[in-house]
Length: 317
Image (cartoon, rainbow, N blue to C red):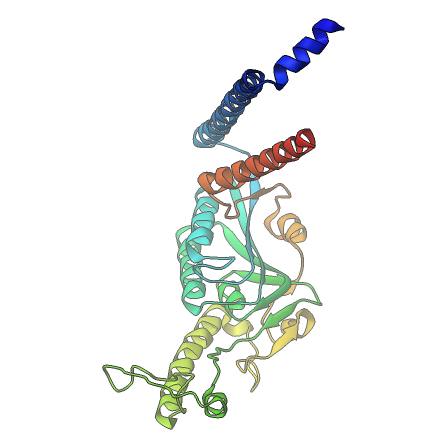
């Protein structure tokens, strides 16, 4: 009892406090070293996984006869859900595989960039010409509108559900005008440009009729490119009406009557009944290894640090 008392008293002395702090500092250093080793091991495991996947993918020469699937899901654009480079890369890999018996492009997109859409359209037509024995079939999920339909029009055939939304063959340019609001707030617009049309359609300046006419011509030009692509892709199957290229949407059932789609079907039914190969291999774009690694490592670190801070909080209490 006397020994314990003397020991306790010694810890309350300045020397004892210093000793205790030094001891706790040593423990903290040990914990830091353990976490350092843990993260190094985690990084090494990720690298090992990458190497295994890379080597396996590089040296796998045959995966058996299959239907190749490429998903096109979301808004189309260079910084959006779907970009042309990724989809084109997937399509090229799908067509180049000697085991691919047919390609299904599953589309669920409201549209987006006409440039990105046209790039995919032109590449699909090139691949179909280069690989005439491999058909490409577009399958519409919920919606295939605007730029999404632009891409679909390049397919050999288009399949949809009766309730799918198809079409919207049109082009839109939109913005806002704040001139009235600025007048009410007493805000003066000071715009300096080099070139009389550089400030065209500036939202803080009054609209000029000449600007609106020029913008309309731009939109009409892109719209005509869209129309030409649809006509070229659909050919005699297309039933043209006054509303075909008006920007309207139709159900899959209505789209079939207008020749915008060929039949009703799903990915599975097209693979089974049209291509004749029920085994489906997904070639869809995926985040590259570095993006996946960074994302997963960030999640792991975040969870670990969160747990560690919680544990420290408990200990300090």
